[in-house]
Amino acid sequence: MLHKVREPSGRSRLSAWSLPLCLGLLIGCSSEEQPIPQASTGPLTIAEWKELPPEVKFEEEGLQRLREGTPELQDEAAFQKFQETVFKEELQKDAPLKPAGSY
Image (cartoon, rainbow, N blue to C red; front, side, top):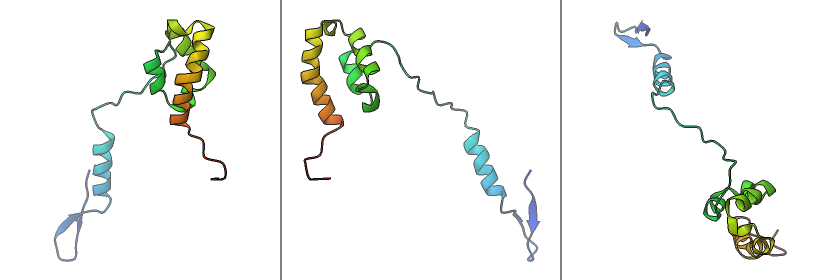
């Protein structure tokens, strides 16, 4: 309930806390719910793997999920080739090394 305060001039105004309270209620009571992203743990294609954040992409679990979801990477030689090409390119893109002496 909003309380009115009488000013010395005889006019009434809303108390100072009413506006922040109303704004808080409007913002906090939004009927639109935001979905919470779920962390996926299943197999990945190369395209899906490339979209992962670096902290997931280059970890053992991310690479294992990639191998599970990409039949051509099941072969050890093919996976080594992938690491020498695509993996290195992604690593340079996501975590480029600074030239020596630039620290």
